[in-house]
Length: 252
Image (cartoon, rainbow, N blue to C red; front, side, top):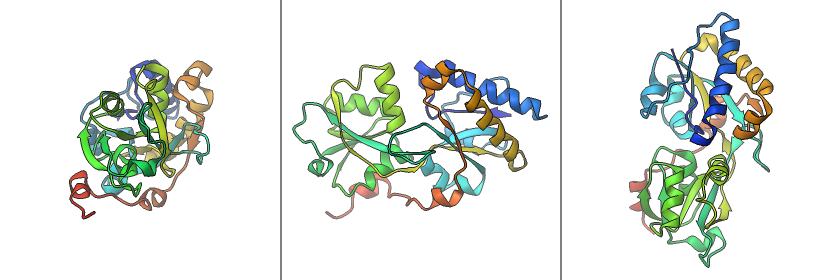
């Protein structure tokens, strides 16, 4: 069995993430489900998401709607309490250097975009949907490295998941020299999934109960507010963007 909550597993909140899993695990075991002792932390997220042994996983919305929805059961999403955002949804923040004279997203037409991954909704799809003529810059591998690329003048702008931005602000010094110049539309948050459809009701109950009973310091560290049922249709309604290479080759 595999359990993983990789999407916001920042080192600064890893203890709180482990506490959340332990609370879920204990509820699952109490209901008769054999849950793994600890979270799996693998660099190969697609292998994890596709595994027939996946009891609980967490995936970005773009891989879910482009592929995974055909193979896994959607449980819902964690509500991270973002302001002006529906429960369980999230959005991206468009971030630039604080000393850049441009202050609105529209002014960044032609700017060099850093993005974390081509399969990231928050880092790539949100930027592709922004109707701004970005030039495609470096693929950085993470939101943290996208922020670093902007600070280091390797790019002008990036779309950064608002929850990841909150974690970067709390646990790094990367946000001090940056500013927010725009926000994306809200879309369904990081999807909680399982390969075991028959265990979905027990998993949903365990997740909701664990979040509700999590110790206040851990709730504050993670920013968790609750668990929200979101339908597959809500994820699938969000368009799948062109790849960065295809986006870059489109006519102006």
